[in-house]
Length: 501
Picture 1 (cartoon, helix red, strand yellow):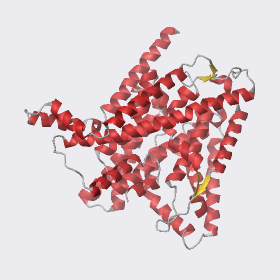
Picture 2 (cartoon, one colour; picture 1 turned 180 degrees about the vertical axis):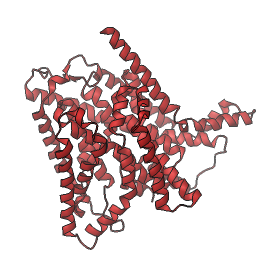
Picture 3 (tube, rainbow, N blue to C red; picture 1 turned 45 degrees about the vertical axis):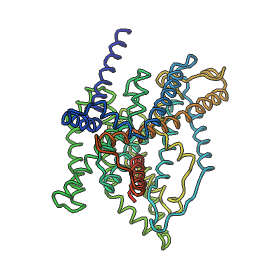
Picture 4 (cartoon, rainbow, N blue to C red; picture 1 turned 120 degrees about the vertical axis):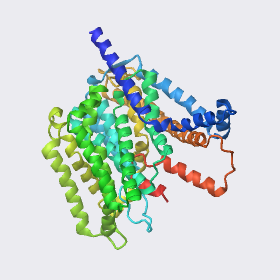
């Protein structure tokens, strides 16, 4: 047994190295700014690397924030280490409790209703479909259910959770398509910024805690989805600008190429390449093989859906029959998915069909959620907050809210173990959550600070030996807007269009 466990650990370490090489070496955009420094030093023998870096660092105004952020993340990593190795705990399988799962989901529903906020649409922009706030709200309630699914071992919700994960990956393709299609920003800054946003904290956590990266399988899914979307949009814009194709022909051509590549990889033996990383990646990538792609296609036709919304719920009043038809179709899609596929409790039967049918409940939910002007203007600020920290809550749940790499439940309150009274176990869960959620919010702030300061550093590196020229007020304002646009469009829709203005 010990020998097999050692072999498994060795295999995982190898897969981690391969994945790290893919993320770092496979994306030379991370290193390309340094190439210019090396070239400059070669072409200018009188200049040394020391003077080059001194010149760059003297212009890097965010270095203090960067160092402070690294100090903060060190504290977060120590807390995660303590939580992951907490001495008093019991196996998560002993915490299977469907009643408590639904009870805490009911509490979150009350919180969501109590924090509802209504904001009138800007008449100039019209009715907004899947606004930034609504996107975060959507991510928030899915993430809450996802975490509680793990905590209470809610086996019967497996198929629904699979849909939630696919919806996250769908948002990656959808939101980034809108961003790239609107701004045509295929810069190194954008690539580095989003790579850091997705990978920075998970990679640190995995390294510090010595856990396999495949535990955070959503991270490589999002990373791959982002770069696939970026390359697809670049190809479409290239066909439009260099070969004279009109908007629709260039976009459809780019997406058809992307679709054919997906089919050629995932529907042939080429997909076995993923086993070089691990069997876990092989399964996870196949489960969401078309999620980001469907998100990209959705982004392409999103403008048509928005036109429909203006007609159905615009300034001329609501079209009543359209509203109720939209709701009927939405419920019908969700019911059809459940009746044909979702009811099946055998995950080994459901998993093979999931990549082809997950869009049904996703589309159904979006139709119901946006089935009136008032509903598009309404969102829960409580769920919105939780939605903004989904990446951090996703990776930290395994080590702080739960422990021993998600296999155990920590016991902070005496008597709240697997044999404890239900209310003590509930209070223990709340106490863990009080530590877990603020820690995740802190990790997000640290990540965003690192993200913005590193992007600033990359800009200074690209300038190389260029003399420092004071910025005018207009240039400074433009720089601030550019920085804001880099931070947005993580997964949502309308924010990308806002950041372009």
